[in-house]
Length: 207
Image (cartoon, rainbow, N blue to C red; front, side, top):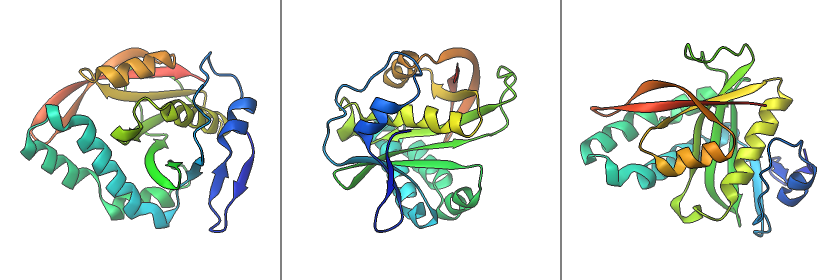
């Protein structure tokens, strides 16, 4: 999966350009802007719990503040992003947190876990991409492609053969991104943000 190293703190570091050259083919997408300097993806550990919570809150707020009532946003951020719950997830051997760093700055992360899927997901070896977050300053830089490719490769390496996720039906930017990565809508489900009950698309793709 490309050259993997460990830095002085013991974190797994993925050389992005080597990774993109050597990765198992998954579908016609290449990150043409992967020459960004000092871009790495590392697996999170228990010491990253506070970072993940703050990064998740910021990324969610930036993405949805214009479409979300302030009281609903506050309620969602308070109930969803918990340091203790994140530590519990990090301690679970089936959890996979991947942190994206750009020039030594954490700018996003992905969280995958083999959660119980909805009825429309029939695959016995499926993993859910629960969160896929990037800070707004990174939109359009191509780092999302790199993070997604790593999610797919890591999932395949762990023995999973499909990935599924849910995405708000009105989140046009994210939905277009998932479709470019060959995810297809296979169902719908409800998603609650504070008091706002929303409709999500359920996407899946093979590995």
